[in-house]
Length: 519
Ligand SMILES: Nc1ncnc2c1ncn2[C@@H]1O[C@H](COP(=O)(O)OP(=O)(O)OP(=O)(O)O)[C@@H](O)[C@H]1O
Ligand SMILES: [Mg+2]
Image (tube, rainbow, N blue to C red; front, side):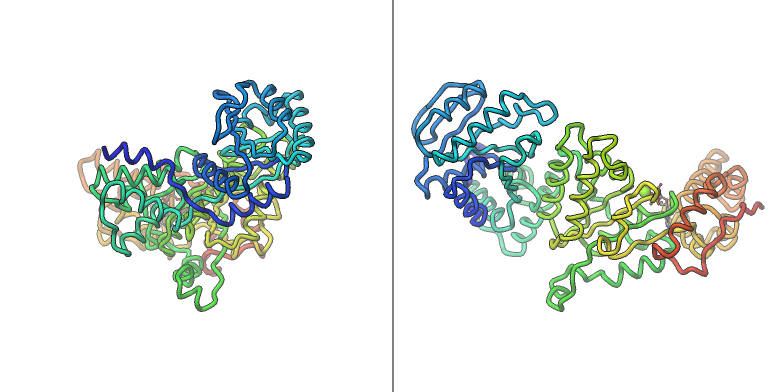
């Protein structure tokens, strides 16, 4: 009973005034081709129905299953073949809006059918004369370059709090639940931000069944799963406290100074929301760890963008992937958007098209544009090891608020890291000679210190005892650090960073990465 009612809610009509007005204006101005990008077919259909009703236009749908149908009347043509469908539309005399569902799948962007492309172009010319608007509807914009300019692209943003509120009211109503109190309601809507209306609806319905109420935790969990399906953006639930980052005092105080930056008070004070941070440095020095901790400092949700996966196999897909990832991040905002190992995703943009037809360069350009112009409170924290792979435009001021360079930890920093790591594995730092351990690990990164400690835990476990300084010293004797094997590239990275990036820690504390001291 409950589920049957929920199923009906798929048609929840959510108004989006601005978008509706824009579509109405395009139709009235006889724009022949519109491409509406949205993963919410039902919501877009509801908007189109309301637009055509208000303008007194007929609305038609074409699908490869049903052919061409007039929504208020009946089937117009049973042409399920795309070429025949275009002919059928061209022959019609009446004005109207023609929505071609899944049609973009026929116009393979990489390998378009020339007959189909030509027919569309011809149809668009004749459509203009008869006040017809052809609408392509898809969750991503995928058009061959020959058609890109023929269509006006409109990206539907994900539903805002107000629209999600309508969804919530509908769910509560159909489940015969009383309205929930304002504070709990705000939490539910916050957790649903970034979902489509259908996803939010499903998650809320599930929450009532599973948790007997609409609970933010269940909604957040479902949102994390929904985003994962897209494969590019991921909600990271794990909370890393800034106290788990050893050293990097300058970087940490930069962040802590801005801990209130995304609050209403900061906004009222007139502070601009920080744009983002780029953390460059030696592998294993805690860049990813710090990026994760950023979200805890700001107390914002953490989203990870997989820059490597951004580049889909199809031309055009990467751009729409980026667009939809940005749209989701903006819907969830304020949020931290973490791009780990930035060079992996954007490396191809440097060779500007020699390898992938310019896709990387274009996607990278869109990303830079967004970084430069974004007004939504999305704080970007990016990490990178290999700056030689990164295009210089990225490093220009104005994209990120600051670029930090993380060097090998100093002695004082290594003391902090030892303390953190020993506690992390459930042992007491007081049981170890931290000062001596820090001295012995000159030239090791944070992650190497962790690896040495884990190794000594294994050794002690095998010897049926608790680990001690001697176990660690024994492991250190066997250990070859990155600083030894990669000293040239570390030197190069350091000299690049000089004058270009701010040091994450105070300069006088920098170690030279000497050879390991042994016991
Ligand atoms: N400064 C640090 N303080 C505490 N722990 C650290 C620090 N640096 C590294 N670690 C430990 O090493 C692990 C790996 O570090 P992390 O992945 O953040 O390094 P990274 O700089 O991102 O490396 P890569 O460049 O290889 O991605 C961390 O999860 C943490 O346990
Ligand atoms: Mg990392």
